[in-house]
Image 1: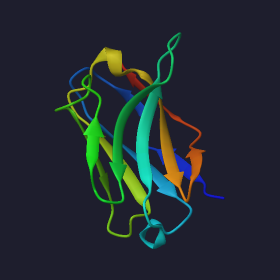
Image 2 (image 1 turned 30 degrees about the vertical axis):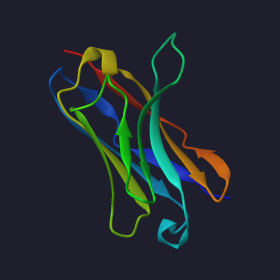
Image 3 (image 1 turned 90 degrees about the vertical axis):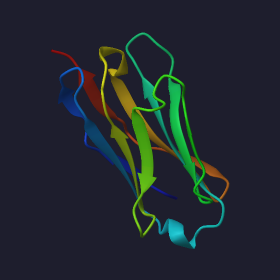
Length: 117
């Protein structure tokens, strides 16, 4: 069983930046072939994919965040980050960390990001 814990959400003005973190309870450097990603869910909308990074260091982004958001991992591979720049009110949502590790899917509890003046 793997736990994913997000942190770093908050209130920011349009055009501002935030960095989210997702800490995994397992040493991912010891895991072969995993996928980590970020999803978000705005009020009244379905959960949508934001970005993905893999054990082979491939990264992909939704068109709505491409060029503004960057996903990365630390050296120990235990924490994933989402650097969010030039935030827009439409980015307001609960952001969830996702992991597909050893063939099982895991989700974090979510962290609120609010973009408002």
